[in-house]
Length: 134
Image 1 (cartoon, rainbow, N blue to C red):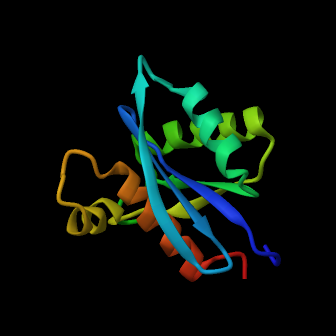
Image 2 (cartoon, rainbow, N blue to C red):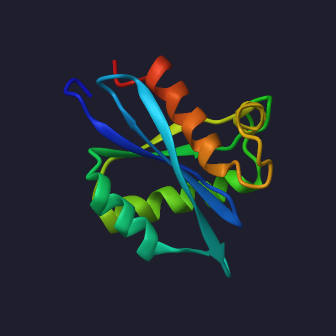
Image 3 (cartoon, helix red, strand yellow):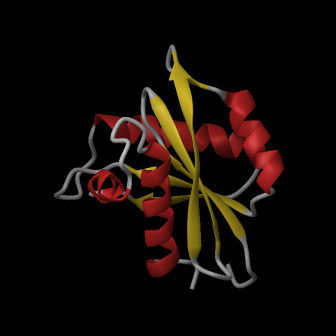
């Protein structure tokens, strides 16, 4: 991304999806909210509302891998979610490393029960600092 862009990042989980917003101009990210997943279905209405509100140029989804880089059961679920995001919203969907992001999020957030949006912030910050489309 050569032009400044707004991105939304999703930390996918089977019970909750954390959402953060970031800017390539400042390489900063802010946690937004946690979206519930019920009966294996994300709250697509809420996701649509967030996308309408922030008008991102791209979406970023964390890629849950084992520490050795191998895929895990949640990886396929996150892949499917990323595909559905792309299909529904017709925006570029990027993937980002997310190993150890929960650990980093717990060090930032006092409420250990609700850290998914902070984990999304950590994922997005890592992408902005290391990949960032440069």
